[in-house]
Amino acid sequence: MPTFLLLTALTAVRILGRNRLRTGLTMLGIVIGVGAVIAMVSIGEGAKAAVAERVASMGTNVILILPGAVTTGGVRGGQGGVVTLTTADAVELKKRVPLLRETGWARRDVMQIVHGNKNWNGTVNGISPGYLTIRGWSFTGGGPFTQQDLDTAARVAVLGQTAVDNLFEPGEEPVGAIIRINHVPFRVIGTLAPKGQSAQGMDQDDVIFIPFSTAERKVFGTYFLGSVGALFASTERPEDLAPAVAQIREVLRQRHRLQPDQDDDFFIRTQVDIGKVHEDTSETLTIMLFSIASVSLLVGGIGIMNILLVSVTERTKEIGVRMAVGATRRHILIQFLVEAMTLSVLGGCLGILVGILGARATTAVAGWPTIISPETVVAAFVFSVAVGLFFGLYPANKAAWMNPIDALRYE
Image 1 (tube, rainbow, N blue to C red):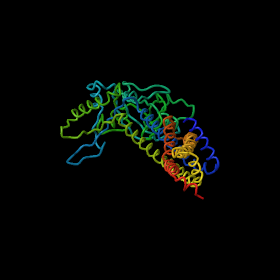
Image 2 (cartoon, rainbow, N blue to C red):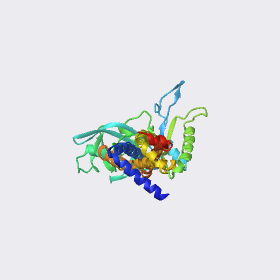
Image 3 (cartoon, rainbow, N blue to C red):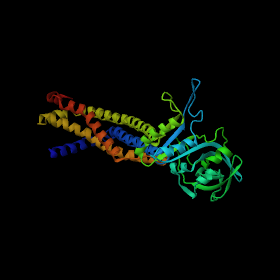
Image 4 (cartoon, one colour):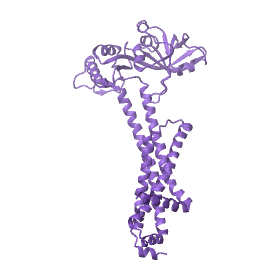
């Protein structure tokens, strides 16, 4: 049997080699299909990895608590429309929720920052010292401000890399320099390591951090001291996030004196929740790209079936002669199936090369991240072989079930 299959394969190669242009054009559909599947899935996987990296840049095991909506006089306001979170909430959460490693708070606004003859409209964040720890910020120069700076409303600032690039000349040392925020002078005490874009596509390095007390008293102003734009917390382990969220909700409802029939006046999101949303989006994108690319592969399969049907017609008399000298229907069936498989295998191999080169070119030209996994390559190749087998069955059966006498009479 192995010898028979080898001879059949050699015969298939010889037959397909008779008309190389037709064979090449037939394989082209498989080549494009396999290449498209590998390239498209690689782009989708690269997008998923990029999103995961951006979500990870938020910090480790982060919990985000945002002001919610409240109902006043039967009218429900929008999210963040009123003050529902305060610095006291964060302090109380740290005391009453043992699963929390750290808590912090922040409030931000876009303001003009001036240094020398340069100015920049950047995001100014009034934060607590714990915020930097929760978000996992590291420093390239200087360091963070302390609890004492927060208590004394010190005029000190920490700059992100985008702010440094727009406020200082190349090579100029930011640490120790004086900048002005809303006409208030601040001394730069630290510069942050770059983080790149967030999962929402925002530049995380376009930030300036100052003590929260300084921000609300000397820069932003406030109608209610201690009101914050968001609370942040973190846990030691990812598995602690869900129980910590439940405890946070219970503590905040008690502090805000919410009745059992009242909705929460805050929203809680975890790093896992945010990552899951973006992961689902990326997964949908990958499936969509795979589906579109698979259509090309199916079109290639139709091309194989079409050319084999033509081949069966052209070789009708040959089939009759082979049957007359002892070839069985199984032999004829296998012969045409092997020809179909040869087309799909050769096309699949060339398609793998095209897909890998296409993915690399996409990264080089467009700058999109791509990840070529061995599983994707194997799956695309197996799919191409399966397409060849499936679309080769009908022509092979048509050849195998010919009447030998009619085949010999065919002109």
